Image 1 (cartoon, rainbow, N blue to C red):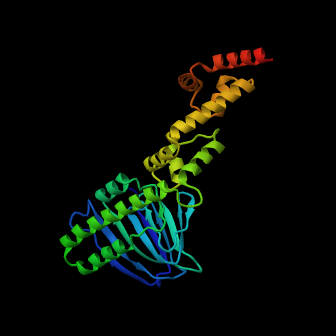
Image 2 (cartoon, rainbow, N blue to C red):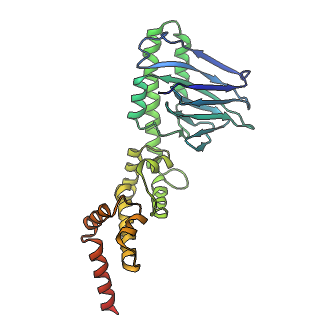
Image 3 (cartoon, rainbow, N blue to C red):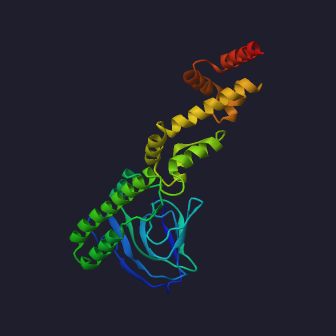
Length: 294
């Protein structure tokens, strides 16, 4: 990963921090702790990282703040956890009126990367009302008590980090499957597809919109509608193609381009596979049926 550049503005901010130097903990190439601690409320608090080389895992004890990541704004509040995965540029700050108090850890290593990816958390950010505060407290406690006993510290903290990720993943899936909020993520995805049928729709991009991994989003959507989001996208695009073939004089190539297919040949093969005949024949038979009815 690229070199991380970190700026922390206003260094007078109240924080309790435990920092570990390179080589201080055994096995840090697998799981290493850069630092961990508690940040107390201060409206001046802001952190900027470019191409971060650590996973920032944090829990908001009280107050709230703002995070900017990949052009999106997130606003975690009391009771929320958030994960800023390594490799990305991010900025976060305390709210001006209700600055957060938070407990956090910055970790790295190939094992931490694998765990984040294995649980499908790399593209998720905020986990609402997630009861993991005791695990964060235990992580900080272990780092405090065993700071001089490096092997014991390394063994305990990697297990706690794993347990926190497991809890985040299970909590995220449970909330998604229960459709919590005014609208469940499955309904949101369905309505988004319906309203953007002429756009290029990717599963990863759709999943990011509802703060789920692609596999989690697919599972939630399939449970709600009995089909995968990919199948639903193709079905809606084919329905639209049928309408255009029957009611306009647009060429097959134009329709393929309008619906954001890679090329006419791919579109025609897919149309035949799903509708049972090539687009040209569908148009001809449609016009014949219309003429017969007239």
